Length: 118
Image 1 (tube, rainbow, N blue to C red):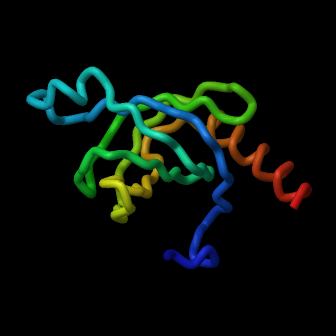
Image 2 (cartoon, rainbow, N blue to C red):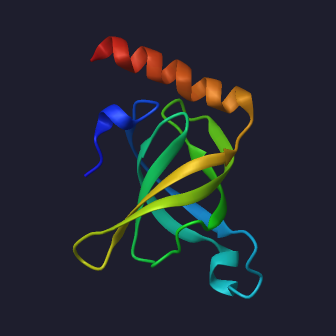
């Protein structure tokens, strides 16, 4: 497991499902329709999700995340970490590479309020 002290931002638990659409692979028709995954945490720099699909590191996806405030955030993610789990599932760590600053601010504000509750 990764040491939380190495993280640039606190990961906050979330339980939402999103669809990923792969970028740069027009041959993959299945991901063109969207791959349904379960997001388990989010920070201002990235997120983690669980999927049964075996995805490649350094692959890019377009997605929309509904955060705690019910705001929708459009972003492009890059998969930077992959861990095998039980039941033929994988845990993926992703960084946001395409997100407008106002959406990053929404996550930061939630993070600030969340820290006060801890």
